[in-house]
Image (cartoon, rainbow, N blue to C red; front, top):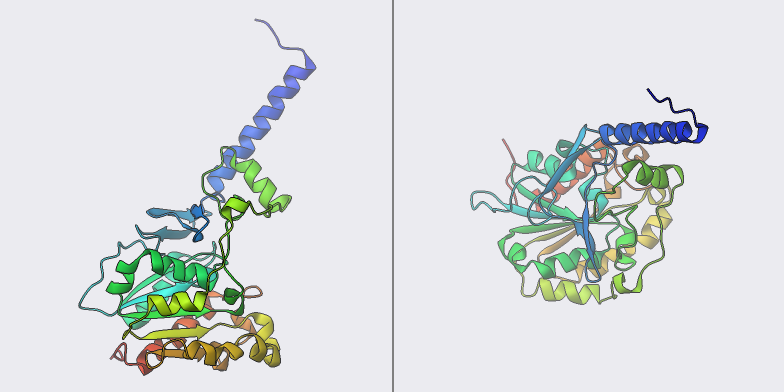
Length: 301
């Protein structure tokens, strides 16, 4: 039997063994089990349809055939009010949220109605409206619309930039991907010109989509953590948009300031903007109250 005694061969085998072990551990951990995205220069990016998984093998997530954040196919029921829930990562929930704790699921339990959530992380108002422009059949089948909007949503559309933040495919070597993203923190790349989303008149898009419209629209103004700490900042950034938004669709549009609810405090945040599980529950209750006041749903006995 021939014995391998060349140091460089033994070192190479050892390095390969370590790399394979790390790669297996990375895949078994579930760290790479995150949603994939489709990307283009019109909508920017959105979750791929018909996918599901469990981040860290614990926090399950799912998207249906229309990239809505629910495992249920979009089949509106005439026996229930069908509510389209629109937003960014606040609506979708983060990686460490289970499906049952995400805003759409909580709101569905609270109201007893069909909630259809969609959105994209860091999406702007224009990205959200682009989805509606692409899916007029969804607009036609929906009974009411709920937008969850923060100040950043009005800054303009978001474009796809990097596989680190919004992956479009599974990496061949997950361990290298995780090392680059979480250790080296390489999660930004220069925007490729061909992927840049051209800015549109988002308010004109809104009027086009919802004109003529007789379906109720509820808009929730969602403050960042610093805007709860600083009321003047909240007024300047977010409340200043309230009259403008209400003027978009007279008669069927209501705007609610989440920060006005006494339950909404700094403890409702897990970071500078995203809600905790308890914050998500309170947000769902504020939306439910808005739906009740507009007689979109009946009080549950």
